[in-house]
Length: 135
Image (tube, rainbow, N blue to C red):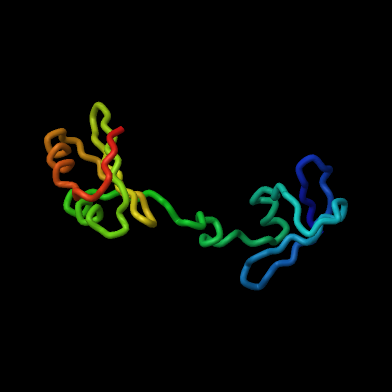
């Protein structure tokens, strides 16, 4: 038996079934009589003490996988902007740097340009069908 707490309730026992692949399933919280409840998990060190494995990397990533990536070469950025899944480009200007952000289906790609002239040339060479928004 492990002790978990449900928001607004005192901590109580909750059985945890550990799958051989490392997944674990929360069994009913006895005071509520529910099959699932919103549970505040124990800290990582407490989980290790009780022998509950860490979650896999696949389980902790977002379901849609929309994570940012940085591109360091202008040529690679232009190739990415010409892809079929590229939707839009946002240009963010600050004092020192101009950031070009292209939204593709899986990732948001960012290119940082430190030269204002190169940034203007890059803006003109973006594909015409792509929506460009300046921030």
